[in-house]
Image (tube, rainbow, N blue to C red; front, top):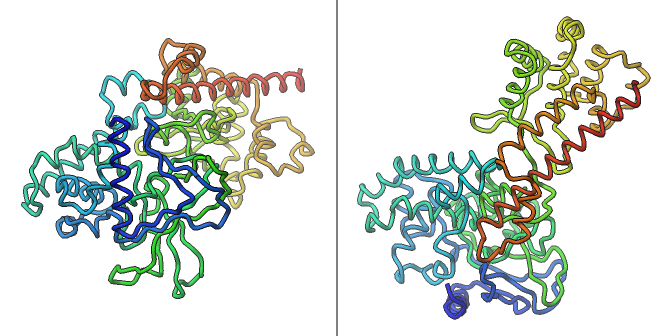
Length: 490
């Protein structure tokens, strides 16, 4: 969209807001001059507690307010799938839709990896945390379309052309729902909220929160934060006592200032605290130096490393003991994995597994003999539990275990030379997934990349560089701990 067209659509949207009761403070300016999209700026100082926008629930596009509400209910669709149908239907109606002017302001689709070409996704995301996820997403959405959207078209419930509900149109609608929708309340569920979705995200730096206003009947007398679809993934509804059974709530949704903003500053909302993999996956952008970034190391990679050093039998036995002691990794769909944090520190469960894998046979047998005693009443007391089994497997003195109160202290007990060597090997194995380019190569590419004309490449490089820097810090972590151990036990 060129600048002139963007400006025209923004003017039309402002008229649409006035007609639909959406109030935007004069202290805010909607800016369509940025080639990356519309954003919100402060034209006067904003102070904590200021009310800067109110949005009637009826102005929101939801599965309840859309003209397709009856068909959606009859098909028993819910959540983001129902909202995607609502978006497709209102887009298909064109000028006849009450939300046409609002939808015209939005891009046809957001540039999230879901709608990148297969070649682009393969080339740009290789090795990253999104590599497998995007492929799975496409498979799941194709299944959704086949099982839910096709029957809806065939039923004749909606007076639309099949092309308006094509798989491609469904993918486009899903990108908007993923990146722009909010969970409004238990009645409306997920919805597109005009104006609120124009505020860009800033991790730990937001100026406004989007809330549901409370009236006198509210049991706690407080506002309820309205979540973005991404941050609400694990919570299907937000109960709001102010919504009556008929679903007709009189109170508006509100944008409240939670952090001062100066004149001229961009005004940010927050979509939640998430790393770059999640931001790129759901919203199509990344943030430099994002402290919520992580790298995952699959359990399968750990067992592969163990088998290469010892044997398959050794790997199975050691992993089995680790599980019998009550440990497991993170679980996601069909994978089990361990997180490496932004500062390069490995998840405790990974350290414990590597410690067990590298135990000498006689010490391993000793641990097996007392394993039952280690999973008794203390199974939820992580610090005491780890200290107990380290004492069984090490010549460590009881005095060294006294006063252990913090997780980093417990992790230090597991820093054997063998454990640290294993971490270095796993970091190298994880690194190979990115291909032949070095971290320095990626950093140089990122520095030369244009965020506007090479948006996909730019954000994929931010993700790659951040993840590879975490692996670099993991190596430093392992190397420094190994050297410390050598100095203590020459």
